Length: 504
Ligand code: ADP
Image (cartoon, rainbow, N blue to C red; front, side):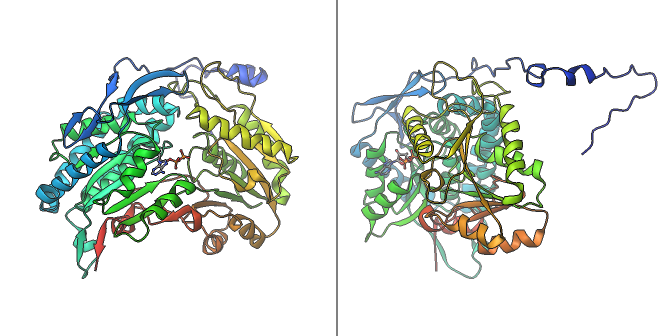
């Protein structure tokens, strides 16, 4: 939209912008630091496990530190649950299921879930700050995306709790029992909401294990659940690493396992529980393609691409890490992308002007570096934004590669970092072939002026979610999930409810 400044009568003339435009653009528009203050945020020095409505010391006796990846400072010590702790949590969840939750009317379950939703809204600022401190994502993102969506998921599912019969009209439904849920570090609180809200709405009780690098917001959510006075044991939060997750997944009294994380761990879980009665849903890796046709609104597409990969440091399993552009617009897109990337601000996740935050962990940074080095060795051309890199913490500047082939590792492997691989195509069918030529199938984006082309592509692309002229947009009413090695089962919408119910 063209922006014009009109002068009203009696008003002073607006200051001329001519002089500013003539200056060095980057410097003239430098922002002063605008940090969100963490002063009013309370993080306990040490967290136990939230089991049966109480905070308990882990039987393991072990704790591990969770750190701020942008400063490498320890934020808190967190319990490292062992198999016995997990067993306690599952027992508590079973008891709560038998005694309270499975017997409660849907309308009453809804009241508790609404309470959680409202408390998340009330504490949104604190939760967003903790999310950014523990995970490294910019406050802009945790404040404007993670928190509103987490609250929305609880509101949405609270609405379903007393209407499940209508969701599956004419069919008999039943809750499943105890849900064991394991989540990753990319959207810590939002993933907890995606998992807990539908499970509770459908009458199941929960044992949730957050990722070891980002446990804090799940623990704050446990406090919210405590304050909302849910019956003890309806939600239990156990912290720990892979072994804790494995113990939860294979526990014989867990009826449903819901996992979001890497494809390799997803496969391991699937193998471990094969042949048991457990229901399973997996939301695994992705290597999303953003497909840009020559007739697309190019500036809008460039912004969508940047948004889809760099703002969240590529930390989204559906991050648009492959860019497929129609050959005739390749050069112009590469130029615009480079210009746009030069304006991105990388730095403190708590600064409201920060676009690109820290990489979640040292291990993740090492993985990104390794794959980028492989891209260079394979002869692909690399461009990295000229962002100054802070001394402390884990950082990687927004980067893209051109000249890659479909067989390059950077074009095939999930990277989970702010790294984009640009490939070209000549026809819609070639774009489809290249986009589908991956073992994943979580999401894709199509940018074109023609609605019919979006629909054509959507029918051909093997991806669970396809965005048209936008990217990375989520809504609790819209089911999300993958094809192929990106997993199975849907989260969100009516389809997401089915993952937590027996429907006969
Ligand atoms: P990423 O590579 O994205 O960190 P992971 O799949 O390793 O993803 O981790 C996702 C979640 O799975 C984390 O909570 C992690 O602790 C947990 N996890 C890791 N290994 C296992 C396992 N063998 N069984 C169950 N959960 C696991």
